[in-house]
Image (tube, rainbow, N blue to C red; front, side):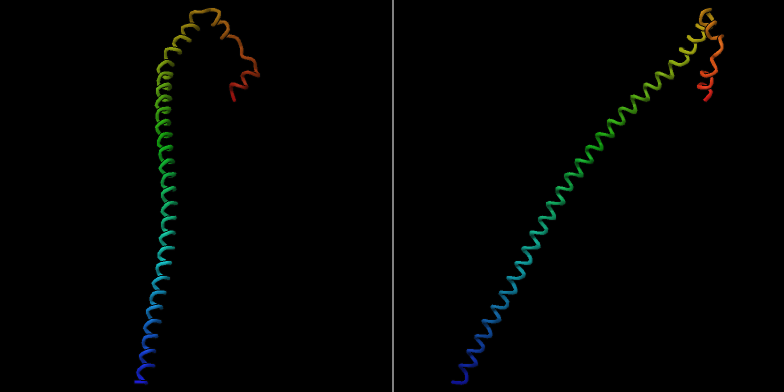
Length: 121
């Protein structure tokens, strides 16, 4: 019986040390998991913010695209109106040249050489 007590005491001590070691290992894993969860939450928050900024940029670009489309359509309409008016304006100039002697006389004069060079370049 005297021999059994030290063995029994050693076994109990070994069991307590084993349980304590396992508990410390689990605690370390829990700390690591908590740190990983905190990091994941921070990364999620960063991603959410980046996503909000991307959505705002996309919205701004879409609005700019709509504005560009409206301006382009307006310019196309203005060009159409100008092109539609060119033949009538040309005809008015021709009529003025043929019907008004003052205009005809002015058009028959020579263009100064300096001015002619500007037109030719």
